[in-house]
Structures are given as C-alpha cells and as structure tokens.
Amino acid sequence: MTDRLAELAANLATVRSRIAAACEAAGRDPAEVTLIAVTKTFGVADVLLLSQLGVTDIGENRDAEAAPKAAACAAAGVTVRWHFVGQLQVNKAARVVAYADMVHSVDRIRLAEALGRRAGGAGRVVDCLVQVSLDDTEPDGAARSPAGAGSRGGADPAEVPAVAAAIAAQPSLRLAGVMGIAPLGRPARPAYARLREMAELVRAAHPAARVMSAGMSADMGEAIAEGATHVRIGTALLGGRRPFVR
Ligand SMILES: *Cc1c(COP(=O)(O)O)cnc(C)c1O
Image (cartoon, rainbow, N blue to C red; front, side):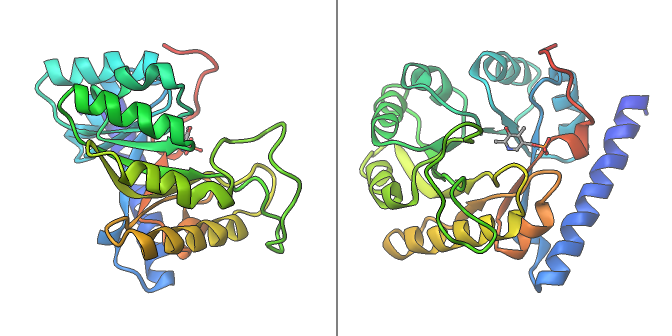
C-alpha cells in the first residue's frame, strides 16, 4: 500500500465510523446515507485511490477541474458517480451535463431549463437537486435578512417549489431532492432542520424526490440527525486543501 492509499483508507474508516455513529444515534440505517468524497483541489490520482477503496461517489465544485478528472477516470476505465456541488452558471450547463450524474446546485428556473435542454441534446438524463439557501436561518429558526456577503448560494425557501417544478418539467432531468449548505459561524442543526422541512415539502409534491444532500466534514452528524441521505465530505477524507488547484 502506498502512503497515500493508507492515509485515505484510515480517513475513510474514520468517516464511515462517524457516519455509523450518527446513524445509530438517530435510529437510522447507515445504508440510507451515501458518502460523497469531495475531491476538489486534489488530483485525479486521489479519485482513483478512493475508487479502489470502494468509494463510488465523487463531488466537485468547479467545471474546469471536474471535466478533466472525469475524462481521466473514464480513460482509466474507472466508473464513479460524479456529483457537481458548486455554484453553476447557465453557460456552463452544457459542459457539466456531459459528465455529471447529479447536479446538487440548481437554484433558479433558468438554470433548470438550460440543464434540461443541454442534457437532452447530449442524450443524457441527469439527477438534479434544488439547492436551498439556508443563510437566513437563525439558531432559533427565525428568518433573517436575505443572504448577502458570505452567501453560499441556493434558492430562497419561497422559490423552492417553483425551481423543483421547473426541474420536474424537463424530460432530461430527474428531480431527486434538495441540497443545503449550513451557514458559516452558526450552529448547523437549525439550518438542517429547515432543509428537512423543505425536503418534505418537495417530496409531498414529487414523491420520487427523496434525496437530502447535507453535511460536510464539520457537521455530518447534525445533518444525519436531520435526515441527510447524502453527505459531502472533503477535508475529513482528503486532508486540508491548498489554496490553489493542483
Ligand atoms: C468543499 C465542499 C464540501 C466539503 O467540505 P469539507 O468541509 O471539506 O468536508 C461540501 N459541499 C460543498 C458544496 C463543497 O463545496
């Protein structure tokens, strides 16, 4: 085993046991929670090692980085599910639907329409999540002024049903659920409780939309307690990120 493979294996074991402990505390089955390894800023070699260790789902947040990694994995004959988790411009939709299996960051109708058109053109069907802005969640659940500096993206909760409907209306997209990023510097649990409400609202109208993508290295336990089905883990698996792309 190379040093890096051993390091990733150890980190993976730790993350899996954190997921198992959070599931046990919440009375949930760990099989309900999909681990997405967020490999942004790390090279494709790490993606291949993670795949070797049994990780099946890989997350990236920038097309310029994700596209060549996806191509390199395909060339190596390695099949993983690619999750696009970053903010997305309409003019990048065509590129992203070429490799993404699930887009987590659909937060406006125009983006849903562009993704649908481009996926159709590429002959693909892509799972999509409505990203919900959780920036206005106070610890007591009360609303704050709308997202400003430090916003992590996402549709305002009031817009979520319309964005969900726009995804569902596209024949080449599958509305799979919702995604949220907890606000920085405030407790995650109330934000994820809010996301769970939005997940239930979307599911009431679209019963097949069962995904709740929530939880990162620091707060996967809170997210699992609120029903996360997909956790997006970077640092705890791969280590600290350098401030530039390798
Ligand atoms: C980077 C990133 C993650 C992973 O964050 P860590 O704190 O490193 O686990 C999860 N979700 C999104 C949207 C990200 O951009």
